[in-house]
Amino acid sequence: MLQLNEPLADLVADAAAGLHRSFGIEPSVTAAAPGRVNLIGEHIDYCDGFVLPFAIDRYIVIAAALNGTGNARIASSHGGGIATFAVDQPQVEGEPQWANYLRGVVQGFQQRGHHIPGFDAYIVSSVPGGAGLSSSAALECATATLLEGLLDTVLDTREKALLCQKAEHDFAHVPCGIMDQFASAFGKTNRLVMIDCKTGEPELVPFENPDLTVVIANTTVHHQLSDGGYASRRKNTEDGLAILGKASWRDVTSVDVEAAWDRLGDPVNRRARHVVSEIARTRLAAEALSRNDFEALGPLMAASHDSLRDDFEVSCKELDLMVDIARRIGRSGGVIGARMTGGGFGGSTVTLCESDKAKEIATVMRDRYLAETGLDPQIFASRPSQGAHLIGRAG
Ligand code: GAF
Image (tube, rainbow, N blue to C red; front, side):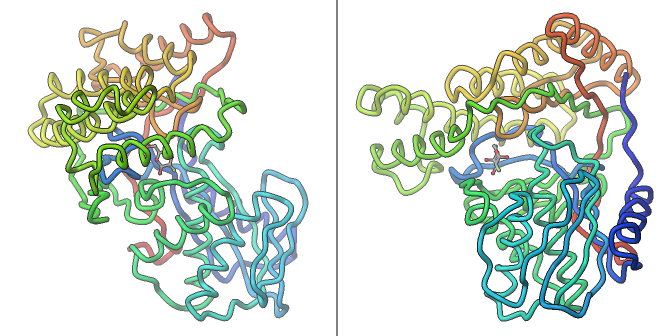
């Protein structure tokens, strides 16, 4: 039941064909940027924590060519017509909403003094939307990479990721941390992108053990009620830090949180406990991975999920069920660890498995989840892949 990932070459061909169909032209530049999955370190990228994501082999690809006007005209395989907006003027939000991610990135380039020429573009994607796998960061990073190609310029990778994060803040109004854009921009084949979010320094950590497979399970649930949930969790952590009187979560210990429990009050005290414990778990998980200590890794992933469910309250019953199914398969069935991944309130889980049992594990996960929810999940294996790049100019 493991679904196959569409090869990047097929997406590139689809994007070129779409550009031709929509605008009658051939691409002069094609850019690709991946989604991401996070192994551990959740909701702590905006708390100076450590995170351990990698760029997945699922991409947003944009094929484009200059059109000699002052407008961008964008079509996509998702339909919904052609989005047109002026790129020779300051950017404002508008309809359709998905084009705001592109507008935000265009604004970032304009603010750096670039004059953006009009272009026609066609977007295709193999990153499931609303699945907690950062399709929005992939769209931002693909757009930024496309503009680099059209302008024949290269931004520093860190600056590009930060520009994309700002686009998300200002044009999608999600006060996200740096994890998603960093993973999409810095990702490399067979490498995790371990980020120290205090220094903003990514470190590429080898992840190439053929005996290990990462299985991603998209519950297909996206909770509309959660709108604003991300921002409220971030606010809780900011309030907590202020009450604790510390400059950074890295200066806070679990003893500090226990001592200030009543003063922090509920739910801020539980949010604080998650942040401090998740920072510690992520460090331990990175160490465990580096020595292939899977017996240590599994319980850390389990504790991460439980903390996100109980203290941070960003899980949901479908994520809990998917994680529970993987846990019941257990170590004897080849499951090393499982947890929700990404922002939560729906979306996906990540399950680390022994490679020779991955197919069987995916089948059991799908069948049991379908039987209990009536929902058909999307389950696929993924591996660390090349981050944002121009096609034909992979770095
Ligand atoms: C979302 C955000 F965009 C990230 O910055 C991160 O906070 C994540 O949720 C939770 O770890 O993907």
